Amino acid sequence: MRRSLPALAFLGSCLAISAAFAASPPKQPETGPGGRDYAAADVVKTGIGTVSSGSYVFYGKDAPSGPRPVVVFFHSWGAVNPGLYGGFIDHLARKGYLIVFPRFQQVNRSRPADATALSEALLTDALAQLANDGNAQPDLNRLAFIGHSAGVPLALNVAAGAGTSNLPSPKLIFGLMPGGIASTEKERGIMLRDLSTVDPSTLIVTMSGDREHLPSDRASRRIFEATSGVPATRKLFMRASSDDHGYPPLTAVLASPGSPKPEYDASAIKLPPDPPRDPKQKNTWKWSADMALSGPQTILTQQLGNNGTDTLDYLAYWKTFEMAAEAAFAGKDAATLARDPKLVDMGQWSDGWPVRRLSAQMPKVEGQETPPERGPRRRLNQAPSGSGEGGAGDLNKQVRS
Image: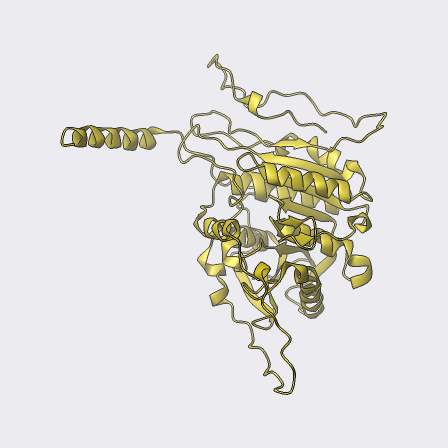
């Protein structure tokens, strides 16, 4: 054992030296989608509703030149704290968006079956109050939904019910790592409504990571099939790729959209207390097993809190959302979005080697006689010029548009 200690020390020093000289991943761009060209230096953080039934609201502390586009952020099951997505929220708010974060779940007290109706009620209340806020200035003609994991089917349910709930229809539904969908009422998860009622003009983009991707892929296929009223030209499936070319490595897992930021922790945003309950009113609340977080849900929530903000956030999640929102608000379809080479570009490591790009593919349509126009052919993950090495492009599919 004594002989192994010097060897271990030598190995550790070698690893430390390797990390010190390894290529570093791209930093946040200075400008453009995903970039740091912010309109506001600080963010207003407030709440609407009560402790047990409320929404968190965020927007730039500036004087907007006009109404702000609105983002409704549907968290994953168990991730009720906006601080777990604080980096993403901060980015969007400082870029000029108004963000509404409905807390549709009380951990260990809420059932998934009630989440859709509660989301609608919270969103209706929040938008009604924000309409009279001269600083918030919501532009409901530019409305987008972001969902993560179980938040994706919730976003789709709310969009499908817009006709009867009197809520505006979103122009974009951006689903990160979709999951948490129940097939029957006995299963734990979110039951999908009849999604054929989702507005046909909605742009639907889903994104999975190449690690732990199978459940998200299945959920994406199910979503695309269920939203039958939305043409295939307005749907796009995307995948983020892991890349360990340098250090720290980029790992596209279920928790990678998490970007914890303490300033957005729920404890720092005070919601009014619940009104006193009428003692004559009968308490009908009953506990059920699906109120408790499952093991994977607990692990996912913990991982969200430990996930660092990195290139995947800047160039995969934040940039893609901004580009998709811009396209959706302009009435453009998924084919137009996918043809833009900037959509899949992930920049370069510090040594010039390209980061593995995103893949983007529109769902196939049976009987489609004229395929959409293809964009220019390009090599993905090509080695730097003069290296003579092959890239990792075989791991990513070329963009289909």
